[in-house]
Length: 334
Image 1 (cartoon, rainbow, N blue to C red):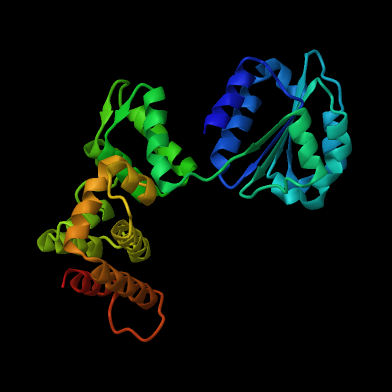
Image 2 (tube, rainbow, N blue to C red):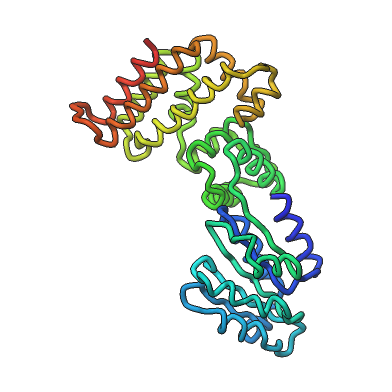
């Protein structure tokens, strides 16, 4: 995130490079940089003749170089963006000759998404030498909350910890999806608003009372009644709460409880770092560990794996999916 911001800062200051090779598993930062270049480097009246968009499946190195070597028309520079460049295959390596002698009046942007380029290749080394080589890395789950908080703060909003956790739980670590929902909130709510679980429930459709975060919390407190109330809600709303993600999140939760048991240091900072969670949630794992000793947690994880197999149809199971979850909760709480 920091590197992406630094690149954007340079672009906004008009400190342009002839080549931008943007690659990596997280498409969001690649799109953010390339979209900014596409919308802002040239004035609107300059784009018809000086901005070219190509796609990896439909182009080759020859076409890319031909576009990049053109001189701008009635403009200081031109922009050539190659989207979905991961589909270029070995054509990417053929850009080596252009990277060795690029046009200073061209911004060539290569968007190589969902995977990394081979940094040992000469073409990649040249891109780094004469331009920008940026790897867009996937964020860990514990980093996504910070991304949400910083994004909303930059737009003039604040968001509380539970609301943040609800978004991460519901949307995972897909930053594009998360950003879309954050933009929706910005359209609906006035600047200066504090976003709480109530706003998330009303505007995004995630229940503030019946979600996996609340189920994990109820399990950690051994609140049997609340656990089965949430479970019944999930069973009544299977489309909004499919069982496979629920089981995956239960596995993630109890894996962290197990990891907590094995930590040599139980300080708040050490636990937050090892479990990759916000310090705000450390107390929940401390409490859960009191109710579930290490041996019990090991058995719970085995039960979760068994439930996952049943849901996926491995072995004959007479239970409906909602009954598999109820049965799993009984095993966990017994």
